[in-house]
Image (tube, rainbow, N blue to C red):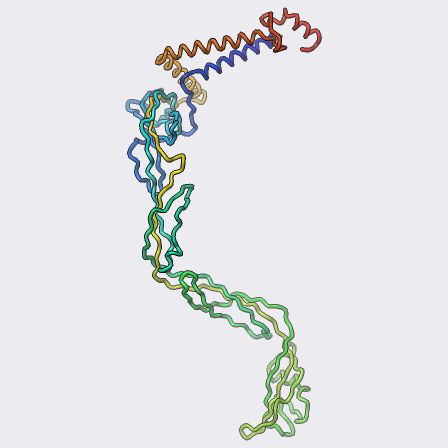
Length: 426
């Protein structure tokens, strides 16, 4: 059980060390991983324009500091959006002297010396060109957001602008109903395009770019017949001699051959006289009508291409927008402080840690030297607190916090410990 007591005492020492670290009146710097690679002198804020965001600035006097120095102390002046800045931030965390980086170790005498409203950037923007007379339909937005920044319209001016030649894609479709076998559909189609902005129309011939057929089906058809030399005993039907008294319907095949139509896609059901005989050119004639069916399909055709709209005069809005500052950037504060920077040249990671610890204890020593009475008072109060906590801890039993220890935690001579050991409760 004695090892267990030693372990407990070690814990007390660690607690005391932690209290000592917290009670030191100087803040422990939190070092960032990335360092600022260049310094900028503080000057009047210039209009950065729409492409650049305003940058906070820092000024530090590094004259007389060399790359081989281990550390140096200097007065720094820096800007911040934070009105409660501690001085440890991404702007102050490091300084480059030549090729050597120095990291911030401690800060003293921090005070705010100035505050101001940062200059806001402006952004110019010109709208797309539109037809004159329609400016109210193309008014610019009063507020826009770009790359996470809000911009408010402060001024706009109507300017002349030309609408250039515009090439537009055009697509048209058409259904051809009852297309007979071997009859082609048109390979071009006249198309009229109307511009939605200008109302201008232009016509172009679009080429056939696609077609598809539906199912084939039979549909009625008819054709006219004129018989010359009516009244003769025989008629000549495309080289076939037909009696004048014969039924013309019986010769439907000959009629199809005479018309140059395929018997697979056309059929004639009847041929009937149409009207009485008449004279024409000194010859007796009579008309007839043939009726039947033809095998056809419907074709969906697609015509596509481009149409060109000629240029014309137009107008556009030329706009000026101003940046809106968010709550975190409504003011810039200027601080001054005495800062100590420590070199990182040639240090291993372990060496950098030792450098931080060394810089910390150096800041403790400087605090004691600059404020001896305040530091002494705090250390005395800390020692009293540690003594009180340790004494209260020693008065309690290690195995029952409700019992007081009368043997200064010498468990080997404690009857209560002997009882617990005998009963197997340890």
